[in-house]
Length: 528
Image (cartoon, rainbow, N blue to C red; front, side, top):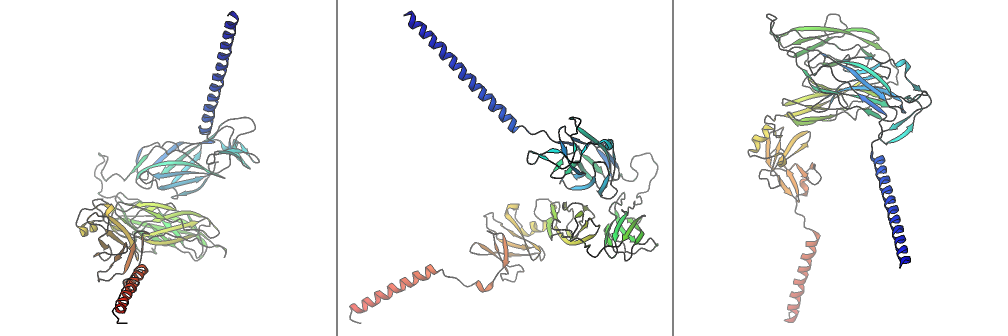
């Protein structure tokens, strides 16, 4: 009995050790899996840290300078990236459209800017001691989450690991009103880093005359301030774009006119458009003058220079493509797209949209909303790396939507019943904005409306498609296929009734049976 008890205790101890060993292995495997998951899913340590700085003021009036003191580029320790250039960009908060940008090198040298003269910058850090590896460099490609080797780069140096930090001071002279924010970009050989947005800042219209108190009597209107832009450069016999859009007034600039040689005689008539073009026929450095006026005919002028040189025969102007025509309602954003523009043996360096209502855009694509109805002439001017330009024109037709229900006021009146946007379908026929609408909410369109002719007609139907009478003459001119959202001319020759072959066969079969029955009857009764 004692021996059996001893063996029993020994077996129990062995079993407990085995169980403890198994638990230890299980715990070790679990911890290993947890560590592996943490390693796999933890974001990689960013190669670059960026900050656009903080604006020194949160609210200013237009043409006031905002200072960003702490614009920061930091390349992390043990990293190196080939910095091609940096971009400081200002965006409008409500639609995230870019309104201004500064392109500069890592050494703090300005390369380009939009609008011209909007930025002043300085490099706070002594960049003469930047660690630069001409033959080696590695960095994290944050898009692919992999480390790659570059032929050259700024960052990790032979003396050890350290963060490379460069500070810049950027001054931005505000030129349009609204609420904005800034971002800093680093463009390297293979990818682009981007910062978080800065804190927002608001640019307000000029103070009204007499504002601020205590200054005595002031005029009810102040003279405008002209700004001719520039200096400009261009080529002989090649159009150049000139812009006075940075001119300002306490109410509104209502007229622009240009003197291309500053001889005291203005070469253009007054225009409400701030942007124009001119071609010089011989090389040289010219002084030009812009005069502006406001709604009380107070004026101001500004002068600048344009340097005209010759160009080679193989230098060709770019191609501008503004797309369009565009159709929309008041207060609705329109997406203007110039992405089909291209250069000839050169790259496009700037895009300038003139929306026809006194406002402008500066990106390849730009978003804009009109506050008044009408048909506006939209111009897109592109400039390439040879400073050659091209201009394309289109139109934007805007209908009034005063109650902002996403339905034009005219259409509200024509329909005469309360419907929603879901009951309306907009389409374009021969460049004209038209509508189909369902008045009884049954999912079937009942009427057609032509916004150009103001004609409302009843829709026809044919095999799930809608027949359209565009001019009210009682004839179908177009057919709309909702399955493909496509409008095509209606072929009146196809209006005859088509009988499917299945029905034709059935009719022939029935006729054949009747004939057989008749013949059988006649034969049975000895008629045959």
